[in-house]
Length: 205
Image (tube, helix red, strand yellow):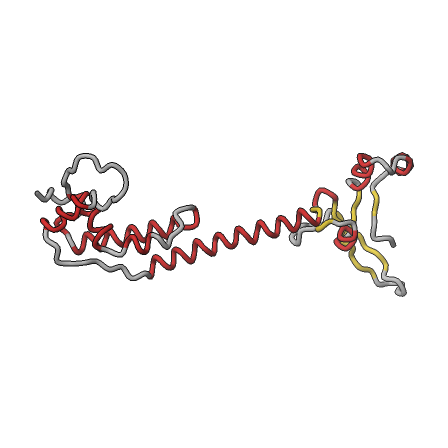
């Protein structure tokens, strides 16, 4: 039995044959085809690995009178052109790479060693905050206003290795989870090391 099954009437077959040079009719013709994976492959198409057959037919194995096997047939709208299939595979591979980078950055920030300089007085940190714009070296600092929040920012940026670790993270999609973990761990260490500036504590003059 031929691997190819056409669900067309005889008139449609004749009409298609008469205008076989027309790309529109060729497209209409191929859209009516039911074919096996190998059959579609020979035509330049790929059947996705998880696609379910549109039809399953039995055929007699040549040379045997009572042995039958199943033939899995797929429709045109279930297949991709080989070029599209390759593009889809590449897209899937790229997506997997993004997920891998996300996981790697997250793990790196979960296990990174965070250091902090201890023993600084309130005056030391206030002066450092004034000199570094509260740990923000860029932009117009505006009027200097001392606060616990400015102290925490200064400690994070100037007295820990936060910025060194932060530079290793892609701040886009792949690094967002890693950054959130880093920021949380650093802020916890700042609060533990300099509890007088912790959020919710009275403002230190």
